[in-house]
Length: 335
Image 1 (tube, one colour):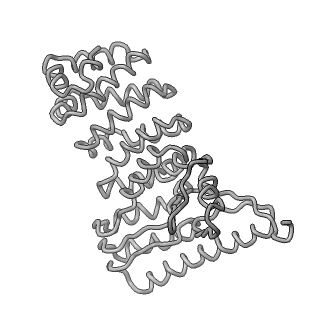
Image 2 (cartoon, helix red, strand yellow):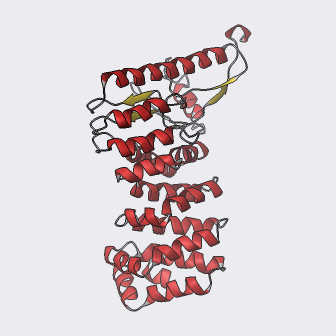
C-alpha cells in the first residue's frame, strides 16, 4: 500500500517519509527477513521513496542500504527481490557511491548478475547501479579487479535483443574505462596490473592510461602483467613519467599479444577449431534490397523484420563481445 501511495507522487513520497512510513518499512524488513514477499514489497517501496533527494538522505541515515543488502543476501535466488534491490542501490549510488562500495554493494550487484543471468531486468538494473558506482577512479579499478567488465559483457551477450540492457551496459563500459587524466598514480596502476593478471578481465581489450602521473614504479607492473594477460591489445601510457625503455617494453608485449591473436585466428580459418577474436571489421557491400542489413541483424542475434526500410547510404553497427567462438571451415570445403 505504501509503495502504491508513493509511486508517481512526489508529495506523497516526502509526506509518507515524514510520517514515519519509511521507519515502518525498515522495521518490517527486520522482522520478516525470511519472507521473500515482504522483502520484495519493502524494496519496491524503498525504490520509490529513494527517487527523492531529501528522502535518500533520511533513508541513508536510517540504514536503508544495509537492510537492502541484507535482503539481497537472504534471498539470493529471488529474481523479484534482486530486481527491486538493484534499483534501490542504483538510486543511492547517485549520492553515496563511496559508502555503498564500503558496504559491499558492488559485490551484491555482481552476485545478482551471476545468479540471474537470464533475467533481463536484473541485468539492466544492476548495470544501472554499477554505472553510478564507477565514476570514482578508485571504484573503477576496484570494479575492474572484481571482474565487472566480463559480467557486463556477458549481460549484453545474453540479451542481444534488449535495448535497455545494451544501453545500461554500454554506459558502464564508457564510465569504467575512461581512465585518462584521472591522476591514477603508481598505487592504482599496480592494482590495475594485478587485475590484468586475473582471468576475469577478458573483456578488457583497450585501456588509455595517459596523463595519469604514473612513473616507472607503476608502469613496470603493467608491463609484467602483459606476460600473463592475452586479451589487452591497446594500452596507452603516453604523457606519464615513464622511462622510454618501459614504454618500448609495453609496446613490444602488446605486439606479441596481437601477433598471437592473429596467428590463432589464421589457424582457426584453416581448421574446425574455435578462436577468440578480440577485434575485427566486417563490411557488407551489395545491391539494394539484397539483405545486407538483415544479415547484420542476424549476426547480432536479432530477428528478421520484413518491414525494414532500405539503408540510405551506409550504416555502421558496433558490437562488443568477450568471446566470439566461431567454427571456421577451410575455404576449399565451401561449394
